[in-house]
Image (cartoon, rainbow, N blue to C red; front, side, top):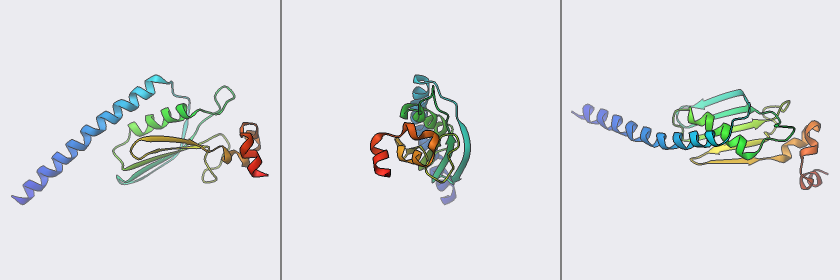
Length: 142
């Protein structure tokens, strides 16, 4: 009898959790529809059970401009919406020729809502991107 009760509770809990996923998936789909995804390449994906999933993504310049937070957020939502439920999800964005592990251009964190942070200072090590660095960051590096 106890085994049957435990099984019932496990099934009910997973059904409740999956119902919550539909709402976040619908929000991600709406965000995707509102903006066309720019091209991207998955460089790395790692997962720790249901605790965390993380991606390293390469994104190109868009019309000779840095990708916007909105464009990066759309990619992040697109990737995470296809995942099973994780407590936390992280997406690191790199521009072409940036090295993984040496500072990403931007990050998106889903814990549980998404936040995108652009880290202009990471471009300091890449001369091909210096003209994009805001003046205040240039002053800090001197």
